Structure formats: C-alpha cells, structure tokens
Image (cartoon, rainbow, N blue to C red; front, side, top):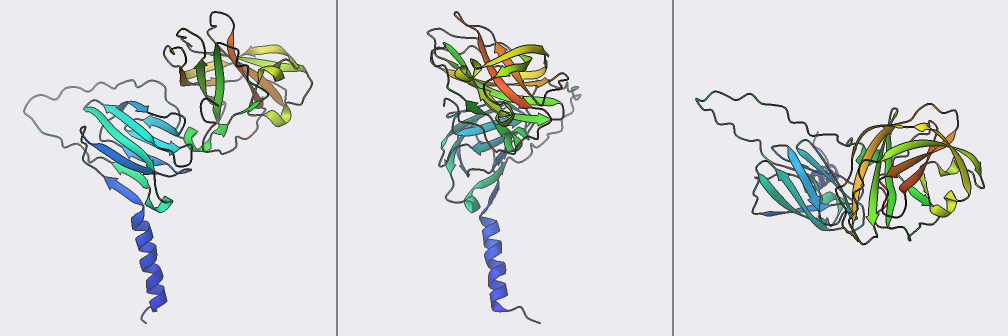
Length: 301
C-alpha cells in the first residue's frame, strides 16, 4: 500500500525541521571567531576535545555560562541577548560570538570539536597525573535552580553589597550563587564566606511564604533572631579582589544542622569592608522542594 501524498508531506516537513536544529562538529581554530546562535530557555553545549581551564563572557548579566571538564554550557538569561565568549584550554584560546537565533529550530544545540588524533612514537609514554580541577557546580544548577527574589529594599549606602542569585538543593547540600558589588573607592577581596543558621524569634511578617527569598535591610529591622549554629561549608569558589565600581560572582555549597522549625534564616557572611559587615540573609523552608527555574535574577539589579 503506497503512502498518501499528505503523509509524505508531513514526513518531509518533520525531517526538514529536525535538520534545521544545528548539531555541528567544527575543527578548532584559535584565529577564528565562531558564531553561536542561542535561544532563551534552551541550553547550547560547546564540547571541546580537551579539558577547559577557564571561560570568560563579555556580558555576565545576559548569559549563564558554566564549565565542566571539556564542556561549556551556555544559556541566555535575557531575550535577544548577545555577547562574546572566550574559552581557554591547554592548546590555546578559542573565541565565540553569542547571538540570538531567528527561532528555536535554527539555534545551535551543540558544537563539538573532533577528537584529537593520537600520534604513536617510540618514546616511552609518560605517566599521566590526574589534575585537580577544584570544586565545581553541578550541571543541574543551570536547569533546576531556584531564582532568589529580594524581599524589601536594598541598602545602597553600603560600600559592599551582596545579592543572592539562585539556589539548588541536592540532598542535604545547598548550592548558592551570589554577586558581590563593590560601591566603594578601593578594591575589596571577599574571601570564602561563612554560613550561620538563625532561628527567627519575633517577626512582624511571616517567613513561610518567603522561602527562597533574600531579606532586604528594611525587612531585617523588623525581625529578631537567635543563633542556631554554624552551617558546614563544603565547597565554593569566591571571586578575586573586586576593583572599585565593579562586581563579581561566586558560589558556595553548605550543609545545615538539625532544626525543628519549618522556616529558618541563614546569614552568609563575608570579610567586612572598611566600615561595616558584609553579609546577606536567606530564608530557607524546611524540606521544601526547590522550584525548577532556569535562571536567576540578572546581576546588578
């Protein structure tokens, strides 16, 4: 039985639609700028043929960029976002231009490099030593993190300000990303933050609906707390010295101690600046499931 003409048309249309989604393999060329078309709420994976040592993105507000082993994950945080991206490996630096795709069907889903060709020699093979790449964020942070909203007003009079971005929970471990803004006149070095558990004793508002929110300075003046203990910091990557007028991002992973309250606060404390403490307060709900949000609040808001 021969298939009907409408059926053949549907098959051909579906095949052409799938072919439009770009899965490319490109020969690495440090002298070439590779154009990468992206779409919001979609990941683009750049997979190289050797481990990635460092990445840098021109506009950190517009894109979420993470690296893991030999892969770089790119996700736009804004509509029609565009910027440039640099990736470093042992072989050199590769340049990319991130631009919005005309449609999801035309975006780059993945860009791969061909595997390295191994050349056999008569010399004795050297023993390879594993390289410690340090702590890394889980890949799930890109697609399953909870965007942290700010409750109350920011205190813009501070020389150094901390904005919490997004949160991801994996078992008893919390992964928290943040941005440090230096409004002062000299460089500020954050160092690794500590995390302290606080139990709310008295509050003029309920914390239950605020789980996953950062409390602004005005809201903090309306609540009294007591120390419940220190959380265990298990990993993290803090920024280097931040020049005056600049900002930088970092992350921390921590475990909480036992608490019988349904909701509680954590204080993320950094090194103080020349005039005051530098910290941020986050409301956590006890055993509350993390919402699946693709991206956090843009930096600098």
